[in-house]
Length: 436
Image (cartoon, rainbow, N blue to C red):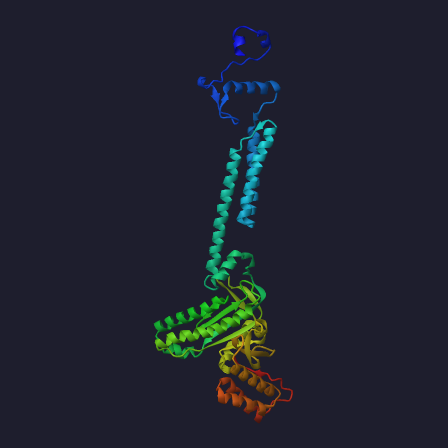
């Protein structure tokens, strides 16, 4: 006890010893806070220092190691966090940041076991700063890319398609490539005659209403509005995002366009605008799709022979009096969910091979009367292709008396020609169009 020393007893025990004199009473104000305790006698801190010096086991502050560790963390965490935040989801980036923090704490503890004190304040600030900078950079770059995609496609595809493009941009391809697509063409019948009856202001208002209504239907069914060509609309399915159901969507959109036109017709009649009729042509096949044009101006569009065929089919709707004509490839790709009427086997101008064309009448099962009419017409077509023109005329004449379609009148006129001037015996039933 200190009292023995003060009384001069047992002084021999102090020989060759280091003696520290201090206090531990709170009132003497020699209490300190340490990492191990909030209240610690100051003299014990001095004793700890002496003990570390005598045993050769002191804790040393290594400035150079701390600097090296900080630079290593700047490089390592920067590369790691940049990669994770750029190529993975935000959760992976957050886990990467946590891993860097744990690595810093672990490194500090490792050096502590080697009696070195490494400050981790700067390394932790460094990691936090790198994480913040990389996160903000990716956010702004990603935001800019999303704005670009939304601006580029927002007027041409549905909001759902835009969202899918933004969500999975890897599925988007703007470079020219050959893909299986369905292309759509529509046109207003006798548009020149209609437009001549309107003032420029009325015509502009009418066109905006018509194109807005029709485009909304196409976008609703997943189509991409390629371009407007006067009163004509060109649209595609299957690009820019791949869609295995593109043919069915296109046929469904075409039927919906006819229904939309009927609703629009009621509004137009109130403004004393005459009856509006449109024709639609669809074709499915391989096409070149991508950005085409000059270095100064280009458009995302489709080109190719199959695109031209769709345009020809739209023209043929005037000839046959049909509202929609689709190629056999579109009918097959769309599946059995649509009830179609065979129209003809034709060779259009610019095509070497003939193509079977159909008119989609409805989706799902038709009513009994429509099914009987289409079945009877198919029987007439079979007789027609077998050059039994008398039987074909009898069936079609009966159909025409009940429903005076332009299609039936066309075949009756054609049959009269063949009865007076029969085709060759090896005739394949193909009607050749020499004009567009």
